[in-house]
Each structure stands twice: as C-alpha cells, then as structure tokens.
Image (cartoon, rainbow, N blue to C red):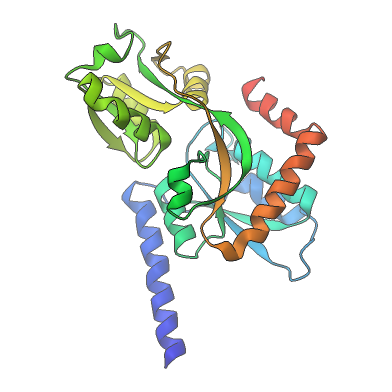
Length: 273
C-alpha cells in the first residue's frame, strides 16, 4: 500500500513540475545536440547512471535553439565538453528557468545549468554551486530610438525583468531611488518585445545576453552605457547534497577544459572573445 501511495505522490510531483513550464509557455523538449554528446560520452560511472540536467529555453548565447532547430549555446557546449572529459552521461531537460528550479527541488532533475549567477542569497536558500564558469554583469537596455540615457530617465515608467533573476534583483534595488515600477516576465524574448513594442521603457538583463540578441537578431534595442553592476559568476547548480558527486565532476572537468584550451574555444565560438 505504501509503495502504491508513493507512486501516486511521485506522479503528482512530476505533473506539478510540468505545470510550472506550461505556465510560462515553456515545455520540456529534447536537446538534440546534447543528446548526441550524452550518448557519446565515455561510461565513466560503473553504475551506468545518466544525470538529468535541466536548463532554460532561451538565454542566448548560453542556451537557445539555432536556425537548424538544434539546442545549442555556451552552457550546452561546456557541459558536453566536461562530460566527455570526466566520462559521465547526461540527458538535457529543456524546461525554462522557473521549471528547472522546480524540477531540481522536486528531485526530477539532478542539476541545472542556465546562466545562474552565484549569490549568497541563493546559497542560503538551498542552491549548491559549482566553481564559477563565466563572469557576467547586468545592465539596462532601451528601445533603439529612446532618449533615456540613464536611470534618471525612468521616473514614473515601468521596466521589464525576468522573474527570479539577478537582473530582477538589480532593478528592484534601484526602483525606489529612481521612481520606476518593475514588470515581471517568464522569458527574455517576450521581455525584449515589450521594450521594442513600447509596453515598458527599459529592461534589465545579463549584459552578454542582451548584447548577443541585439547583434545576432537585429533587435531594435541598445544597452545604456554606465548602467552595469559589478559582475558575478555563473555556476552549475544542484539542490540536493546527495548529488555532490555531479558538482565535483563538473569542477574537475571545468578545470581541465580551461587548462587544455577547450573552454576558450567554446566562448570564442559564441562571443568572439
């Protein structure tokens, strides 16, 4: 009887996680490029374990769908290179930001890589991070023809942020001082369209993400000089200490691909750095 009840509870938990993705128009789907990487990675784990890794749906250039329909990005390539180096297998769960967190917390995913900034607040709330794998800061962008040149131009206006992100926290920390309101979105593309369409005056997001979208997509936006905060590192994350082995594997592999030049190749491929 207990086993049957446990099965029902687990089924409900899986349905709840799926609902989180659906609420923001995001659904789980296979990531073709990383599926191949997972299949080809050497079987370094004698138990044959396949780690389940959750990620966002669109956070270009770290994770996004390219013109050929493949799910790609800096995060995807770094994870594939680390898995190959350390000899472990994994499968991607493309869920969206909020749903990825929920999946990890519910035990439906083992870890998460989605451009997540390493912060003390997140650590205190149960996030367990790897070593940092990329430094990024947040800044403000406006529609390309806007005459807003700084935070002072936001008084009485609304700005867009993505729920639960460092950029949201950054905007919230400035809202009272500069007299603007904050409007929340579930994904970056919708948020950017709100800026371009004039529904909001500006947006706060990770600087490399906005720069990549403006450059590659011809997005009618511009980053406002002098609005960036201090950079923070992105980290791979788990939410269950029992999965510490996965963080250890990530850290060892990251150190190796930085030492052998593979890391620099990946970053240069997407950012030209």
